[in-house]
Image 1 (tube, each protein chain N blue to C red):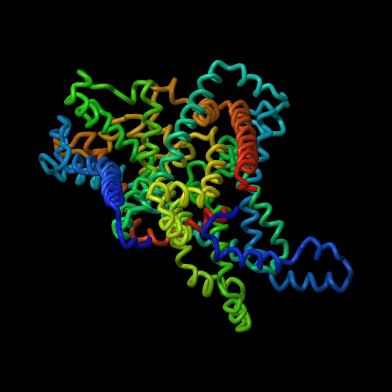
Image 2: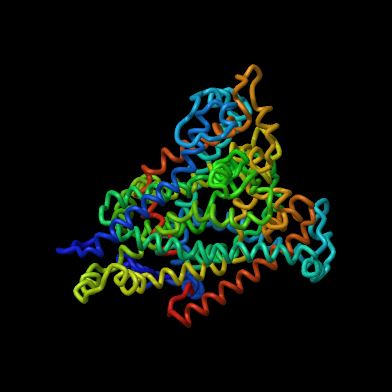
Length: 336
Length: 295
């Protein structure tokens, strides 16, 4: 993928491609002379090959074997038996999930929170980056950046602890609302399902607003100052410059991040939800990932939960390709 | 970015509003952390009444003392420090090593290797299959479960790769003529000139290791092997203040509550990251940009 501000890299990349030898064709030419040459080359770079193959071996074990393990979704796998002893059951587990009572609220919670995050959490970092870029003092700008990145480095466990403190009966939120006369008795926010989505979306925004803006700031820094000068001479004000110079210049970046955001609609922030959910807010907090975790790890229904997970991955891949297709048509930008 | 000779009234007004808005965002970012901090430094029993917003009402270090005296918390802290140090060093070295091999243009099979890696980014490992794999490998309840499954990342490799391609070929060729082997070139030449990108990846992975509670939660039962974040997760999410109280050594001051102990543990757990990251900021912003532009 290619974004703005990549000027240095582009010629180099082209160069690398041009010089890259084609190992497949080199190997295919099997005549004695080239073969000996090829073997000698292989021997000369034997240590490099060891380095590369160690990485490949790791990927085969930790990425490819788990991909293969997805077959248990089509079998009745029991943890005390080897995989080969598990009988094939076809699409049984998928059918079971699709007719399960929990399907409705699991989908609703997953999509509900993801869409809210997309509607609120996607445009706000762009707005933040645009406004931060307008700050004149570069020292002040640096400070704001440092502070706004900080929450990204806190773990969700810590943030869960902070939120529990804030939302407690004697916490600051209840105190403020009581002082202002909005409520008479303290509310236990984390114990009531109706507040859960709001807590998730706003705490995510608090944590990631500054961090998500980094990439837009990078793209903005690649915009040529001459464009601004030209716009100013034409009499454009600050908002007009943002709207008709900055935004169009970074729309490629926005498009790519939008594709990624849409393809992640079925992903929830597992770390975040796991910390904030409890038995009282279950009806609003059980998302697909939590459901897979519960049915699989907690209840030991490995085949069933693997089927749910696999179904999710397949739909996510479809979303990725779909979003990629749409932005390509609209915007001429795409991931692949 | 550029200066105008004359600023209109609209410009001045815009700057004012914008600066105030930015200040408000900074306040909203910092205040929740400050609130925890002042409550942690307050006397535990007194803090239960609430109403501590700007400054401790009854300053007390008792909670922090208790944290450092609790063997449970200190063991968990030790696990976190060990997994962060070991995990980060081997992750950076291993990923950089594979990236170094893949950065060499004459490497036989380079395209195939890159293809194998790209696939792993499109299909990340799902929870259940990964769990079964870790179980089969006998890593449950073992320290290596924090290290080996995250030893390598193709995403980090791409960041390394784009940096290594910038290293002049002459530098590597010259040392090869001097008779240095590939491992020597990697350790003596490539690593020393790549410190900015190494700092970036080390920070990202170090923060991941420091903050990760999930691994300790699903793969580890042994409480002596659980990191501080998993320990805190059990206290925060499962609201098991019993565990927090049981962590208190006997003869602890009466004005330390489970809540104040929790806050003090949170502060101690977070302090290292908050202190370290501003110094590494200039590196990671650059590294993040390279990564996102390429990825």
